[in-house]
Amino acid sequence: MVKKLSKIVILIVTIGGVIIYLYMKEGKTSGSLDAIETIELNYMTYDGLIKSYSITDKPEFLVESTGLYMELLLQQKRESHFRDQVEVLKEYFIVRVGDDYFIKWKTGMDISVNAFIDDLRIVNILLQAAVIFHNEEYATLANELLASVKKHQIVNGQIAQYYDWESDYLAPTMVNSYLHDDYLSLLKIDKFPTPSDVGVFFAEEQMIKSDKSISSEEAHMVDQLLIATYCLGKSCENRSFDKWLKKQWEQEKTIYGRYNKENRKATVKYESRAVYALAVRYFKKNHSPLAHEIIIEKSSFFSTRTDKKTHFFDYVHGVIVSNEN
Image 1 (cartoon, one colour):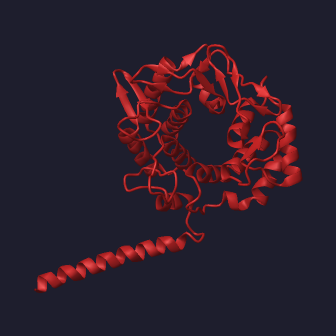
Image 2 (image 1 turned 120 degrees about the vertical axis):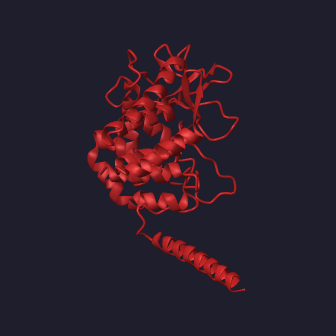
Image 3 (image 1 turned 90 degrees about the vertical axis):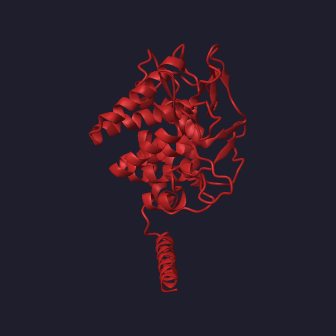
């Protein structure tokens, strides 16, 4: 009987300790949690995977989220956390097929497709981490992953958005928002791709064989800002977009998530952390006072706080960009 009571007491103390710990952690979300703690508390599972949303009945685990989290960890030089995420990457996302190493775009036994942007982001991060953390294993892994991209996804100087290694199927299009100077430099191709514009905005995709552009009716500002930033200083630089975006901010002090390409009017009324973060990066290259102004005017979009409606992509972009300034 005494032993049984002892076990009950131990159980109660243990549960109480857990509750107190969680209570303290929850209490810290009022503002004192740093970004890493916020991510661990709200987005991370016990396995180290990153959920797209903090509260969801059907969690989805994207390698995009893992890569962006690794970028933040590298930025803050969190070596042990970074090492843990490399292990998550190996266990849940990296697949070896013969001599090739591929990265699944999300978890799942039936997934046999990658995404070019995720692969190159991770390769770039691993190569930097090899130097910063003095770990050659990261460089070895990066080069194995890079070799597979070079082997399977480059056609006529363009990069297919994805490759299916089970069916040996290569996507017929290149996604223009995937283009990034640092990533493309790793491929050592002869010339960088040049996205087409459609007036003020950019076409989202290019057909690889014909180079024909594909443009949607709506301009998603995350995509548009990524393409516009890549095109700065290149032949695809779009001065009409630059003029419109500058005017949009100066007159409205707001950049919405989507716009109609024809009339340039917002089609939604939501604002996004990622949009403002990418706008800051864009303006830093050509209108630096505006970049600083956005950070001040939209400070809540760059905080370490989050809520159940905030996608991890949005959250982490706000944090990474705020740490760059």
